[in-house]
Image (cartoon, rainbow over all chains, first blue to last red; front, side, top):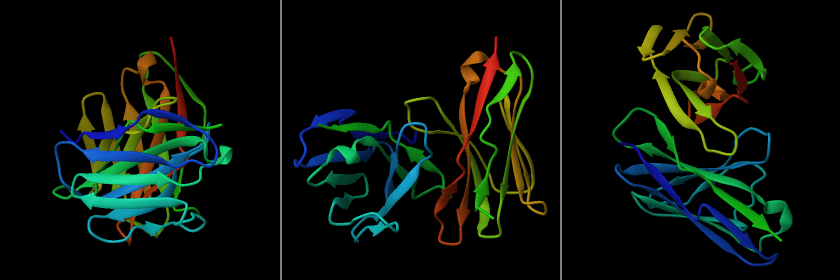
Length: 116
Length: 110
């Protein structure tokens, strides 16, 4: 149990375009989902916390107009990187907290974004 | 003090030995603690969660929590080369948000 999927697993896009990444909890309901970014050989950086039916909470320094988050249902959250630039190239990972378990958080497999 | 601190390593352990990974946390981190394993280029995978003082065993893994010393550890018995990865210690803060340490790189030497 506790499987989280992400789609796509990798994407290459041109500078200035937008990219949408989907995160789904497959076998549990997730009232809260999290979006992280990780650059090579660096630690996870929390970008935002997404709660179903409400606006996302962004960490300091993360532009909410650039990284649009929509938590449409208890099993789906999306991250849209708008007007992507090469410096946005990174490994984006979502995670979901099972509403029925205490604080355990399960990660999706990640999406590798390359902006050319 | 950072909320969750770990030695970055690398920690090198011979195959078959016990690997001991340690983590300390600040007053801002509260009740729930976790160990995640992350292979290079992959996302983190939850291996253990621990909520109360003492030991919790799951297969070759044992998590230990000492709230008085604000210390949590992970022991891996009979270490295998496939255990080579970065191990992330994490705890929840008062906002119920999971705070991650920067991770300890573990190398199991064949």
